[in-house]
Length: 202
Image 1: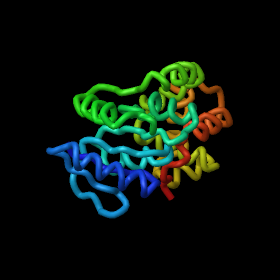
Image 2 (image 1 turned 60 degrees about the horizontal axis):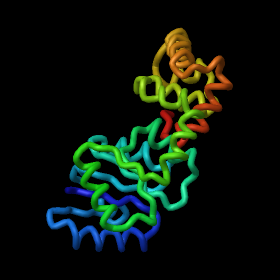
Image 3 (image 1 turned 90 degrees about the vertical axis):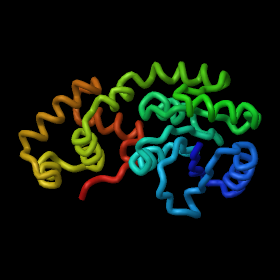
Image 4 (image 1 turned 180 degrees about the horizontal axis):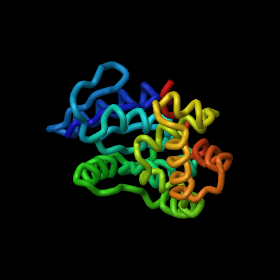
């Protein structure tokens, strides 16, 4: 099992790597900050919502587990429902269960602890439109980011080398998919859902 640790805390990263190296006889553990990973990883463990888009872009075939070191319920819900991560682990989880979770996720299952479940279910009611982000195309995503950064249709068309009519057609479909009535509502939804954390075309 190839695991990449992308965690802000050096202490947590070092400790986790040591324990995983000792317990996973067939494991290959890398730290993102001290290497330039060239291999594909089965699992990427990260700790903040703002990393997920970058990680999915860099390691598209991996499965993603969020180590909850104090994230807001809305962030955890967005990671699970909007970004389709494969697990959420609390910092209080025993190491035996931590290992079990890794194996479950590696086998293709989703791991969410009981203490997160109630909060995630309640948050899901507030995220009906955000889950629709996954239905949008890559081009739609580029347009969304540019809209969220205040670009007008003509500016977006120039950046993406498209016509204004094409941009308007994309936006019309995006409004319908995300169930928002207008541009300001779209910007609010995009901002809250974390899409503005992504790199935007220039």
